[in-house]
Image (tube, rainbow, N blue to C red; front, side):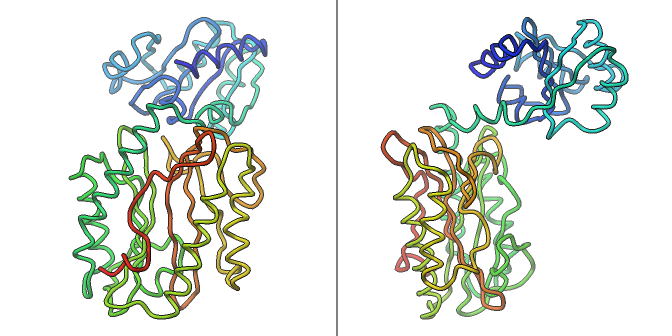
Length: 356
């Protein structure tokens, strides 16, 4: 309710009659509604959730304080009728999520309405997690870690990437996860040079390094982790590059604290990898916020000047990817605390702990 109250305050301050929220995750964050195919209208006085028959009972259970409007025609036409009845003259919309068709429907059918595009109003609140949100993210991490530990014993020569991913998905559900947070990445050998490799039927071979990027979803909150496993032995080249990535991550984690810019955290890892001669093989940002969405604010990259605040939760995931050879990424989740950060994930990552 905190965010909802803040949005109502903003409407009054800005002298705007209503806010139309079309992003499903933002609707869930503001209201707690767990369904989909719905749109939320916030006014200075009342709030309306527009949905269809499939979600009526669910909506009444989830958000009994909101006026539930069942659509009889299309969802956007039902909303237009409500906007006209309420004589809305100024309307905030989410410009990144309102479709062109929805925009035209409102513009052409609601006389006198002034549509005001906005970005990031709700996402600003989502960046700093509440104690309850942190607990859910931690549970999602714990589930993911238990699931990974459950498959380590079957990472061996002859097992395919797809088999590993399928079993890991099963383990996530077995440990209490609702689902995998995203399509699991399991890439062995040279295939791991693709940061977001598509899992295939390729079978693990001797001396392969296996990159696994996975996460669990718990009560709509997500985790996102990456680890490397080795078969039989670790070659000198892998040892060298792995240690560079691990050290880069450590430097970045140690630099996290309130008041620092996001780009400064990225710099700590990127500068170290560059000094070691592998800068051109680290082509993505260092991390991203995580919560109701797998990728949300804050973005940790070389350009983001956003100031870190206590309660932010994000990944730190440096990597080195060499075409024809393979790739190494190590990913953990951190929580910004008053004087630094806590690492919320605890899967072993020292070289001596990686042989399966």
